[in-house]
Amino acid sequence: MDVDDPRALPIAGARHERADAAANRVRILEAAVRVLAERGAAGTSIDAVACEAGVGKGTVFRRFGDRSGLFQALLDEHLRAFQDAFLFGPPPLGPGAPAQERLAAFLDGLLDLHDGQLELTLALEKDRWGAPIGGYVALSLHAESLIREISPALDAPVIAQLLLSALDGKLVRHLRRDAGVSLATIKASMRPLIAGLGISRS
Image (cartoon, rainbow, N blue to C red; front, top):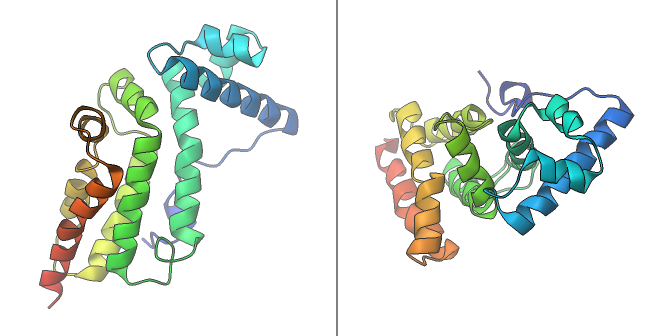
């Protein structure tokens, strides 16, 4: 499978909606962003989002199923933008840079996404009993592809999982909020892990 083919990395799948349905969806998601920013994930309910969006609660349930579905839809928007960046954007995140530089940029970008959407990610992990969030497989496949390019001798699937687990939402929250570690320090601390992958190149 060519993981640089966007068809091989469908984050949450493609949407095909009528214009009015798409506009309604955007209005609800924008309302959810405002409620989430004001109340946090714990205080964000379907009722509050429906009120903010000016629609009935049933409309939100029909579109997203439940609170987890709404949160997943919000995260999917960020994941799609990130996927576009690492598939089609400029290097080093996008094509054109050496694989090791792309992997570093990919993990930096993923860390930025987790840090920026921490409440959302943690809420999803809690609501879904720790099951992988939407798009996780796509992210893992891309990491595997870069690791294989760095060194075919490495066990790319296992190493990809280990690297991604280092950016687990709960760990990021602990480092950022409890331990007071800066985002720049976390990124710099990932670099030796990435650099070590090149040892097996030969």
